[in-house]
Image (cartoon, rainbow, N blue to C red; front, side, top):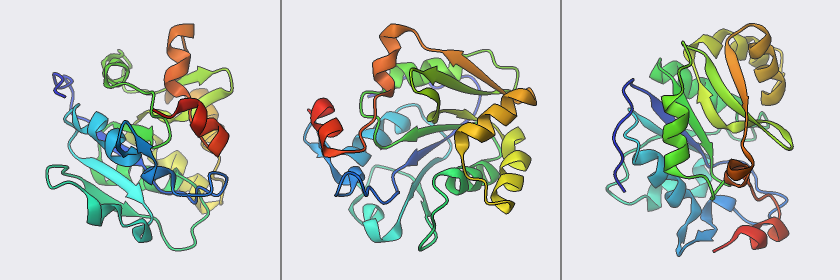
Length: 203
């Protein structure tokens, strides 16, 4: 899969950690079209030619040990026992990359590289970009920017880890834009947290 690179440099982050407690097994290792789901999602991001591609996970998942040799990524390991969700890996990747950061959750297998390119192509004037689904703001498929770093650092220091709440704050501060989704694109944001939800998506 090869797509033309976006005009502006960007980094990408695949969120592949979490405890998967409701799924009952590691979501990152579920099979999608005959491949581990995390590798499928990482390939979508790699096709966009980010610099760099980060993958955040728990070290004990062993994803870094089973990664294909042509998958060039920088690994961000969750601190042991960390219950802060995705905020800290997003913050770490933003600080290391110092450029816009395209974030994708491992459990959104219907997301396409074409839509991810459209995210990167939006005329944002430096703002972060997110989308509103039927369930509210979706923080796990969007474009974060370095301007959010102070907002996230303050939230982390206060143990406020709700990304949706932080994005709402960023919108109020004119640091982020939230766009509505067309009905045709709603399905791209489907995710799976339980075995039943996965059976509804699985290929």
